[in-house]
Figure 1 (spheres, rainbow, N blue to C red):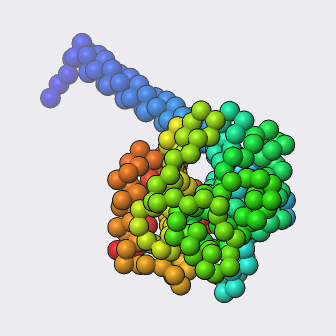
Figure 2 (tube, one colour):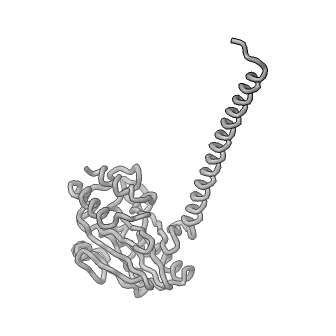
Figure 3 (spheres, rainbow, N blue to C red):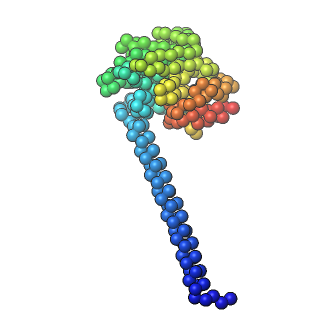
Length: 271
């Protein structure tokens, strides 16, 4: 087939237009990719700034999780499990604070109370042990010594009394709401799991949960089952998820925090 000069130029023009379109598409994709990565980096940077270590010693660490919530970390010699890091939660608002779980002993609890009082300039109005193990109420005596009221699920208080453990001062039947500044925190018992008395805490303002030992970090095994009810565990966590379907952040009893996916992970782990 013969192509005259005019047709040849038309073909070249068409090819040039197609090539230009391809280049524009490639540039657009590249720009979108760079822009997406910039947004991801920005989000990571924002998370990094939000979740930062604000205090560290040999016995206690404190991380800021959000504007109003902090995570405290102390350590427990757990025998065959070795030295275990144990998490708790601090909620602050209007120069008041509520603490979920004490550090593992009185020394670390004294350190935490001192830091909250001096660094955050907050008065601790309540401490809530989420079950009766040492990593939850091991430092309760120090809180009482400093005039801080303690609240626990009635079964936790009963077990503590029967086993000569530090006793919470006030008990509640399944659900409790406390004020922290002009906001509220919720505490609830949804069923057995890690223990027969495990409760969770919730801060509605920021949709942050303290799941305690009832909720597992991503990739965790089943852990200490000595006093667990493995048959009830999944159903208990399902009830937690139904109650708080908008949870954005979950601080677990041991390990790294996560989102609502930790509820699903724990449910599946014990099915």
